[in-house]
Amino acid sequence: MDERLIASEDREQQAAVSRLLLYYLNAPLTEGCRLSGVLPTPGAVRIAVHAGDGEDSATFLYEIPHDAVAPYYIPGILRTVLAGTQIYSSGDISEAMGMTVVRLRPEEITPDPEPERGQALTVLRALSDPDDEESPFLLGFLLLGGNLLRLYVPHPDRPGVIGADIRLDRSLTALIASLPALVEEEQYQAASDDPHCDILVNLTDW
Image 1 (tube, rainbow, N blue to C red):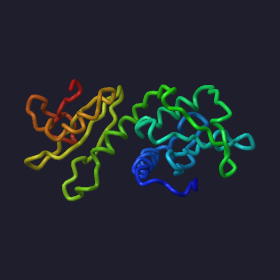
Image 2 (image 1 turned 120 degrees about the vertical axis):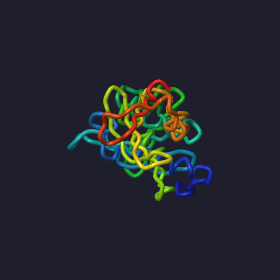
Image 3 (image 1 turned 180 degrees about the horizontal axis):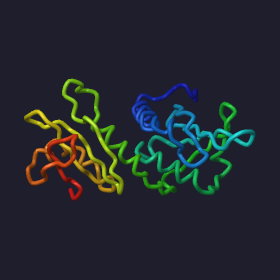
Image 4 (image 1 turned 90 degrees about the vertical axis):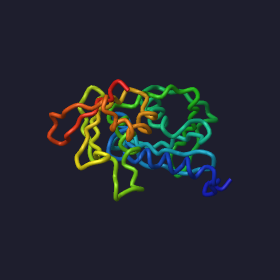
């Protein structure tokens, strides 16, 4: 099959993986391993990873089938693969563009947990949707350490800024969806000692 022919149902997944991995252009996937590219191929995505430095360096293409795993888990799968010794069958190894292609089987790999900054990035991406530039929800953020993240959001019915503290080691999908309503609930609100917001909302137990 011509590798330039990507089925329409694969394009959304391919684009999602590309957006997700942009962050890793500025940060190593693991020590000594950096993202070099995200390449489309029929039914899968190929992630180019440059390993090592100097004459001993090489770039590998790790191929992950689109129907095997959600994009969110791909960074963790790559960290697991790159951090340990893996054994591949000859049928999982091929060549493309002078690089070794390694076909991964995600169902056999336990993804390495997302580090704190990666978890924070997931939240911030979800809340900084550019669709509503005139009324943005996310105004700023601060990593507090210990898996705590403070989000700065506008007060919903008057001038001012609310600081909302969340934990990054909790299930975040439901919290992100509920956040606009939660910051309005008085039971979570307290006076702020942070000069960047007039109200603090504690959602660390939510």
